[in-house]
Length: 117
Image (cartoon, one colour):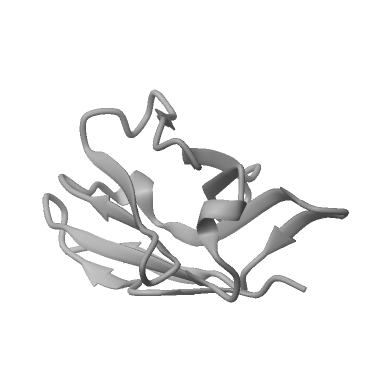
């Protein structure tokens, strides 16, 4: 079983920064891809950023240049550094593993990010 736990959300002002963390219960070097999604009220869930076991990263166009996904394999954690935040970044942010062994589509409980003055 794989458990994912996100934390680090909160209230930020426009233009501010937050750093989200996702802690995994397994060795993340054995996970091919880890993703950050976000879900805003009334909107579809959006893939924000991904990182592979090889360290390759991908970003949604809406966050390129502002968000950075990274990992610390020694702590089995993945991070999402979010800079230059806007109100449009307000959402619940969720960590996802799409495949781990025979397991599919694993999610954490999410962490709320609110950007407001």
